[in-house]
Length: 143
Length: 93
Image 1 (cartoon, rainbow over the protein chains, first blue to last red):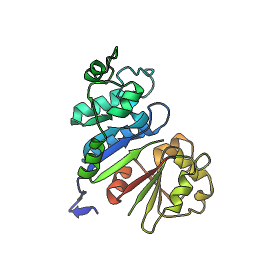
Image 2 (image 1 turned 120 degrees about the horizontal axis):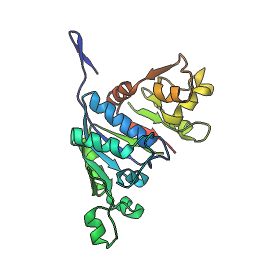
Image 3 (image 1 turned 45 degrees about the vertical axis):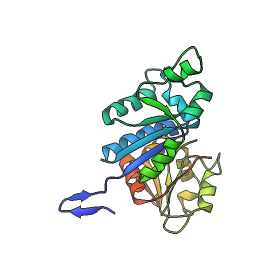
Image 4 (image 1 turned 135 degrees about the horizontal axis):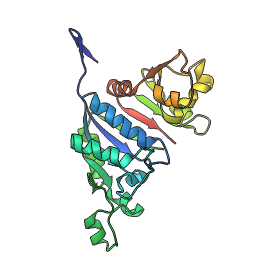
């Protein structure tokens, strides 16, 4: 609960992690996740990790090119990552299925190109379990 | 106590009714995205549970009025609700 000291209300600083299951541009949830991340950082909380899973891995593709007058989720996450040194983790198994590959994975799997965007990294589900263990709150964005 | 976040319309998904089945004493309900369409149904006059919160921006984007029985929150209010409740359960199927 908030504690009041004089004119100031002191709220506890919390550690959040987000799980993003929703594909960009097909549902609002991917945009909601970015909006929530901005809001919690603005409120002074910590964002321990964002885990992109299922169709959410498409957010980490450097090749997405939305029209200029539409929300650019990739640019939004990258800007936030740079500003706050966020840990943006893309599930490696979900990403391989959907064709989101890092340079090293593209080499290892002998694929012609890599497209994982700068600021994102591939890792396993263990990183989601770790985020749950290390964070005060896990918020899921799906649909 | 749990914060239930419903993001699908009750006219196209069972997310809200599933959530209400699992709603316990001390829990709270937050409507976001298409979940705010619940405000155009029966929930507007007589909410099945309380307290009910609604993301003001998502309701405004859909041209929905927020009834007196529902508390409008902005993004900072959304974050605050998430700090005041644990766990946070998202209903989107």
